[in-house]
Image (cartoon, rainbow, N blue to C red; front, top):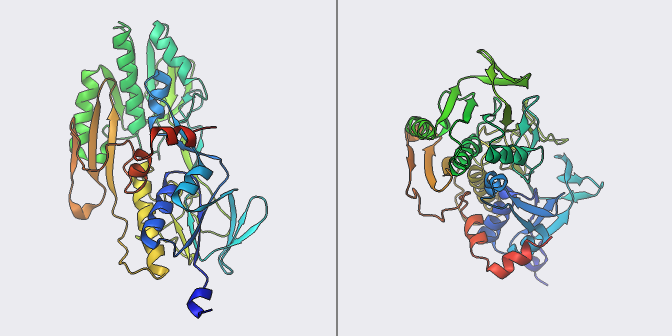
Length: 387
């Protein structure tokens, strides 16, 4: 037997089962073929595709759930039902929750962030099936029982798109129900709505919200909802009947890996975890401030290219160069948003009724994951989505 045939394939362990993890698995299979031994490790049995979650309480959409073992099999990687607990950088060994130790050549951490309550007294929208009563608020809106509702998000949550979708969908519900005297308000720490996309989008979003009769209070932070008032800082309390808030995000601290004050992993331009040789990270677990599915896929692509190159594939890995693409649901229609996040490109900011990119027009734009999900036959999607 030749020396080449005896050579062990480099082992890549991907910790996570969300958008970034699946995008990375697909990218590695494309870049390295069968030259890498790739394993997906997640404590959850399902991949929950959350971007459509804003429509579920309104009866406008459903959350898609896919069996991770079936997806891994279709991609051509192995699957382990367990969660990452600790990493020994000196030996290149990862420990999972059941205590088993897994050696790796390259570790890609894509286990997401923890979602926490942010505003005491408010109903939290978790981005999954109705947990916490937001569906009940929507039913009250439809019946005309609830006439004053505030939508808000905590400081540090940089991805506000769902907040505006929830408010716009609520305005659509009120219009279809013939209710004209209800009041909807968005309270945001941002200086302008969706300012992350740039000045032009912020101005257009402000105009769209005004057209729908949605008031905006910007540049303030929600503190607590009590006694019929949302306390904010700075400013006077806002009287309202109910408040719905996006959650606060916190990093998942892992023994053996460096983390910032918020528990997130610091990474370089190729998504290598700083001070942790052989370890990469992608998605909400990283210290990059924007927590969005499309950004997660871009980080996963950068990490996969760097891993493939380090493992001997002939390619020049591209650095992570964040580009924001978003699809905004407004009720009966959708708008497309585009923005650059790096100053060296200058400000590019646009909101349009027409698609602004050539890739499939999905809520999450991923080089590999979007076409992978879109290409599955309906019958196979039903099989993969089976509980």
